Image (cartoon, rainbow, N blue to C red; front, side, top):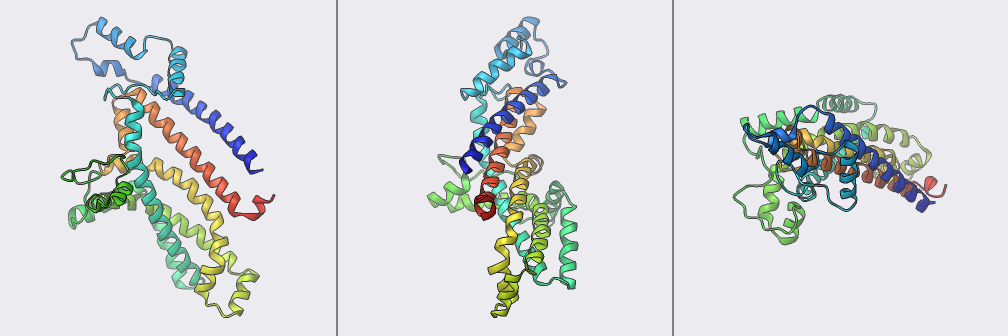
Length: 335
């Protein structure tokens, strides 16, 4: 049953990615602006323009361009960046680790803050503390991530300058890692100077992304906990002498967290997409920052590669969440 579900989802994934490829290829070519004109000096001749069009395949019809590009993608060739003159796959994969580390850090912060807030609200249900938790969660959720970023820059970068407000790591630190996963490889190699600098640069953008998601997790998980805490097995746990906090942590949290898992997975995909603005705000060297540069410069191959990668990430994460929910929920696993 599970294998059949996976095969169906993989087939759906292939169809979805093909649809994304068609849409993004068409949109970037009908959008205003001429990438060839941006690459040439003002005195370029018509012959220069035609030669450059031929070099990048822009002299062919749109269907021909799409077939050539899609054929290259299937073989792992996403083309060459117009502005950076480097293979798109190398550029995208080089920036992807930074965005993944930032997104995962934001997710961990959101789950920790949201989970703690939900437990406190459920533990103090029916009191003024729960009302305060709801008010704070609503206020935090109403502020977008980029605005949180501006607040953090003002507080911790200007008024009380204790954190780095731009970049990914201190440029004075020499890094000769095999991968661009600075946190993971820094821990493995014992380069705690790299780890500390990376965390220092990552903290503000990660908090900016995490706070709205943490508020959302807190609201949903608290409501689920309140529903579970009136069930018979939690009442039985109280009769057996468990305190309210122990009942929440040992009996209620596991069942209440299942619906929240779906929310976290879906919102994690939006969180990755939200890194675009936040990375730009903090000059963070991730995929989102590169995406904005690609759009500004009308770098069509790079835009297409980044959008396809984002789409693939969204689909894979949703697939993992669906399978995890099935494995953790006995009724679905044996249904």
